[in-house]
Length: 438
Image 1 (cartoon, one colour):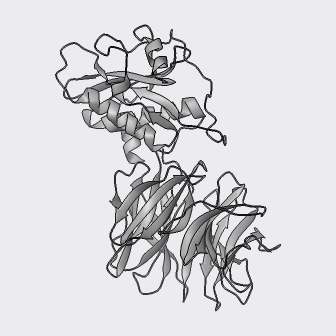
Image 2 (cartoon, helix red, strand yellow):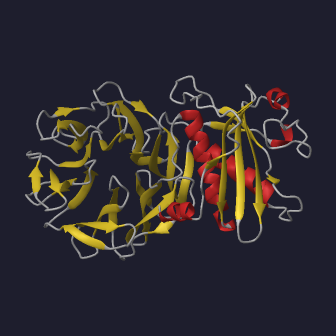
């Protein structure tokens, strides 16, 4: 978040290029349609904006980096440059300097061209996205900053492409928090959506679990055994200041936040077995929501905050249940499978993801919040656990364990386009997606 702010200060002004050119405001791609297929897009090497530019690496670096960023979204098929017909030495980066018929011939529907100017202290870049079929500019931007800012310029324009074509800016300004084990301890790490910039957030030499971003992304709640008892802590992500906010005897685990950041769901064993509470973060006052002899854990709010999904073994085995926000009107949601846990409510409100036991391994499922038959998303010899939705509800993160490796994976909400975000020999678990961090 601070890096993005710094880039803005460095006059990353996001100027629309050449106002006389037509810029389309139409949202073209319905990426939520069941019939959606990846859109073919071509990204050409960038051109020096000033004759005599000596940096021979930047032209290819810009095209490769932007192409990889677009491919990560799962929405685009980036065409191989070996298929390009247009003479790149003669072509320009404007609509007038582009032979759109050459791009139509090779099946491209969108085209990105750009240029750069670097003097060692300042980097100026221009990016243009064209609709090949209509032969028109969709969006163009000009960025100014330091040479080290080039990666963030690419990410910013990738977000602009997504905004122009889908109506949403994508997830390049989000991070995933997760737990990574090392010997007998475990600490929280965070990583960018594209798998870059891995950061170790805690370093307590103890088990640290269950990261939960606040709704504004400025704080992270988690449980740690660093003082012996599994207590809940709250960390300011900018300053690193950490305070203990829940420390009852027994287990203390954070659930989901309220939208205003004023309340935090908790699973506590302070009264014997584990029950669910809603805590006012400001004054630490608790409201008990469940009263059952069984174990009730893993509470998560619906986006409208009218209901809460949770896990209970009150029916004999762990299953997903839903109750009203005040703890009333409890009903069972899952009936298939004998062990279902870790509910995650989609930001769009209609689906709940969870992990369920299948043939001795856990796999990720989604189910309508109103009930019905679940849909299994993950398969195979690995165990998949702890689903977490992206803030736009279009992706899921989860942990995967098998064949001697442990991974954090990201997939589309339908289970397709799986990619590894981070991998290690020791345990990677409990991913939790941040809100947008701009």
